[in-house]
Length: 61
Image (cartoon, rainbow, N blue to C red; front, side, top):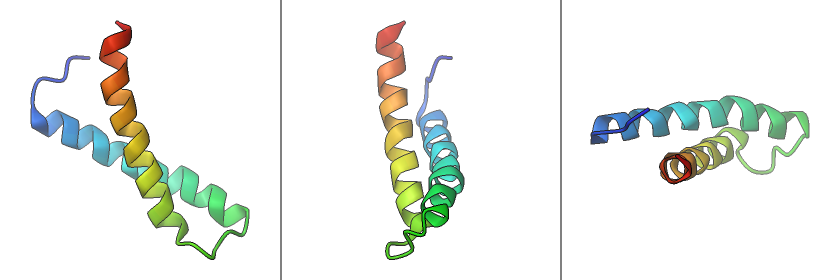
């Protein structure tokens, strides 16, 4: 997939942030780590993972 403009990058970051909210937030809630806000941590990790993947994948191909 070629990312040619800023809208596509923003869209992918939002998608990964939402995946992080669902997956990582649910994992932290299941582990009873409610001291921190699980959805906020999940969104942050998801967005960082998304940015890392967006930057790393073009280098692999």
